[in-house]
Picture 1 (tube, rainbow, N blue to C red):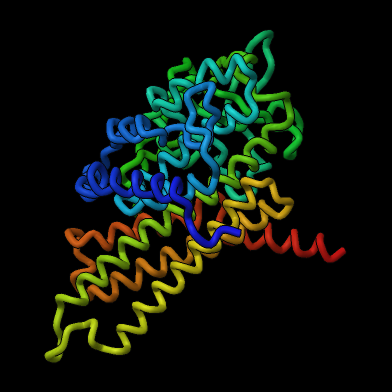
Picture 2 (spheres, helix red, strand yellow):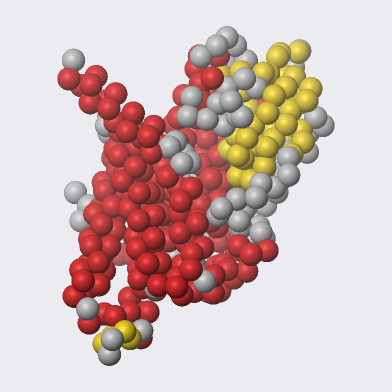
Length: 381
């Protein structure tokens, strides 16, 4: 039972908090405004072991737990949820290679991924296949010792600014059993990228479509056998959902801290805002919800670490609850700032914009409910 952090976990969290405060937070608003992808800062984070958090040590990974990762991503997100979220995505794609790749594949790609000399994107979603990911249509046809790829991926984080694409493609028939996973060099002839999408938030990382037009990828770049790609994708998402929840909590914690500081300074009707009981209760509810979500996240992370049979359900539960709470806490923090919360210089509106997408990606929160419901119904039979 995990109700307190041990000394090692506290040290890991504090390291990430210090990095976020020094290297990320001072630049977050500018990165958002300029749509700057801070690769140099992420590579600095990798020197502290954050480029391969739960990757095995023989290829340069930190060999930490999913619980450790939750602490790290929450801490990094106190500086910028967008930057933390992309480091999470890179870790998720790298873990798929570590967990399902051969020794040759692991030693080919992972040392440079752990240092973030190479950066990876996760490519599952397509224009016509979002929540229904098993309906993806990007086709990989075997031609000797290569696959020839044709199709398109959509909403790919980092696309155009990353080196490797860990992509789910159709090598067989319809449905999840026809999907395989390929690791694709982003400079492969026939691979191209759409324009950087104009988004509500997450502006410090590019989001583009990825197009494949007769792109030839070696068969040796396939992770595992043909037909297990959907399994690989879903296994990656269990951890990804925990990570994005952690990013939500980190961003929300910063918003809460900003609101507390503002309420001590701002006066209305002759009193400081933090002297009004109604606003005190609002602040208390925000802190309670945030702590409940954090406790839930820790439980789900511990379940994933011990390979609990209910881990997928718990990850879905934590993601639904934690990302909803994170957004609501940030939104309430904006409200407590009044008109100033709507101004970019206070940093609250950026957090609200960034956290909104967390309720959509890594599986929408409606899909999280579906995962939980299916598990409950199956268990009742």
